[in-house]
Image (cartoon, rainbow, N blue to C red):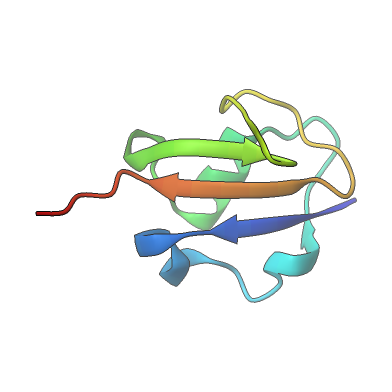
Length: 75
């Protein structure tokens, strides 16, 4: 099954080429996917699945749209 994986801000550099059709296995979670693409969970501030705030242990389903945001600083 496939999901859409959207990596924002500083995570954009780690976005896979196939992010609009990213393959996941049954039972995989957001945390599993982040580990696969090399984004440390402790650097993630917000995760959305289909526009709703989610946790790292949320299981993914075919067609999900996952957005991952880092903590953003400014000054």
